Image 1 (cartoon, one colour):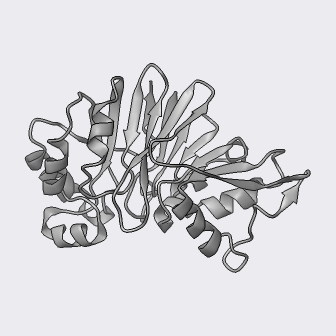
Image 2 (cartoon, rainbow, N blue to C red):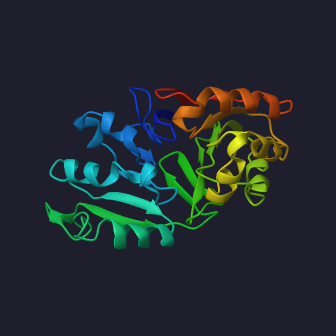
Length: 255
């Protein structure tokens, strides 16, 4: 399994600042933030599955435009995987004909351009030799993270989440865990904002990592653009025996 980071920032404002999305091999997206727009049209047309963690704009911004761009280039629907609650938000507030056409109702070559597939926390989706599992997340809207398992190794992306006791037994049960991508959006001086918006700050991250019982390479995602250096410096002070690194746009994981 090959995972390429298309975007991992908590905002925009420069060539490296793209919001959350990862390309898995050539046919799967995990979230569809602004980083998706950097893919050429031929690569966009190869994407068969999009797994959405939650409905916030920085995680879905490119999805409507991508669907529109590839509509006449494909002979089968793009499948949008998300929880029922998130799919309802997409139907009611994005693909609703007022904001964007409902491509689940538009057919080209006798099939809909897009289709929805509901997932539940703990449900395994098998795509070839790859397994993708929704894991618990705790955010201001219904949300999940994802566990990507190639058989040889696993990567977990927490999605947007605050302190989340429900996730750690799941993560700790992954015997072949190699990579943990976890968010930290705000600095410690903005802890109140982190708590209110259900994100993490470095002190909260330290408390969460203390619950990790597996060895894994840890990468920090979703940092707010104006606070990157401060947040990473505070993480080094709060991470205990762990040595988290900042996730980079364009980074590739193979496992």
